[in-house]
Image (cartoon, rainbow, N blue to C red):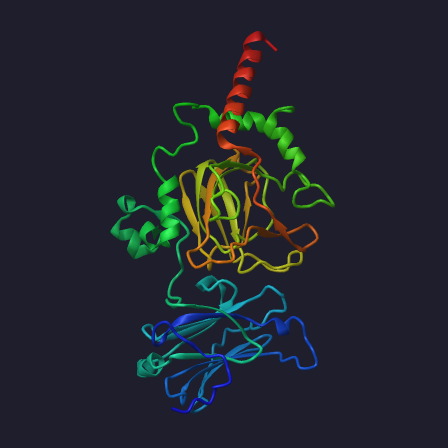
Length: 400
C-alpha cells in the first residue's frame, strides 16, 4: 500500500475512530522567516485516501474532509492558536457520538473552542479514521484512548457512598474511575479514622488557628518567614501556606508524597502546576476555593481560569497527568477558619522523568520552579501544637 506521508511522523489512534490527540506549536510563539501561522493535523483512514484535516490559525479552527473538501463549520468558533509559549491544543474524535471537538489546554469540555456534530450517515466514515498525521510545525504530545464526551466531576466518592442517581447525574467520580495510582492514594487518606481532630488531640485545629494568629507562636513566625517564598521582590504574607509532611520521600513523587497543607484565612497560592503527577486531595478542616487553568501561562493576568470550585470538609478531589494539573488555591477572607488539607502525589507508572518541582507564576509573571519542601514533620508539628495549646491554657488559668 502506498503511503504518501512516508516521510512524516504518523501515529495511530488507540481505537478506530476515537481518541484525543494533543500537541503544541512553539513556532507560533517564536516566529522566524519560515514561520507558519497555522497548524495542520490530518486524521486519515488506513488507505490514506479519506479523512479529516484540522487547520488551527490565530482566531479559528477549521475542519474539512480530505477526499472532497467538504467543510465542517462551527459558527461559534473564534479561537485557534494562542501566542503563549506554554499553550497546547487537543482534538477529539468520537465516532460513537458522531462528534469532533478541539480546544486549548487540558483536553476537556470546559476548554473546547470548536465542535461539530455529524449526521448518522457519517458514522462509518468517522469509524474508518486510524492514522494521525501532524505537519512539521506540530509537536505531538499525547494520544489518549477515550474521546471527550461529558464534563468530568471533580469530587470523588467511594463505592459504598455511590448511588445510581450519582452515575446518572454525573455529579461525582467513582473511586474506581481513578487511575490505579490515584486509587492507592485515595485508599490511604479517605478512611473514616483519617482525622485531624482525633482522640489523641481533639483540639488540633483550634491549636493550629491559635498558633497562626498569636505573635511568637510557630505558625505565625513561619508564615512571616515564608512571605518572600513566591515573590522575593515584594514579600507577600498572604501568598503563603504551611507544608507539614508525613513519612519519607520514596522517589515516587515530587517531594514527600503525603503533605498536610495549612491555609490561613485570606491566604492563597500562586498559579502552579503539579509535575504531571497523579494526586488526591482531601479537605480535613474548613473549606478552600480552587481556580482551574487550561495550562500554566507566563505573564500577569494573561489567561483566565475555566472553572472555580469550593471544596469543603471531607470533600476529596483528584489530579491526573492530563487534568486538573494547573490551579490556584485560596482560603477567602469570607471564611472564618483556616483550611487544612491532606495532599498526596505519585508519578505515573510510565513516567521516567520524575520532574521534582512544581512550576509556578511569580509576582512578575515569570515561570519559576518550586521545590516541594517540608516546613516540619507531622509528629513533631502535632506535639508542638499540643505544647503551644497547653501553654495557652496555663497562661489563661494563671490570669496572664
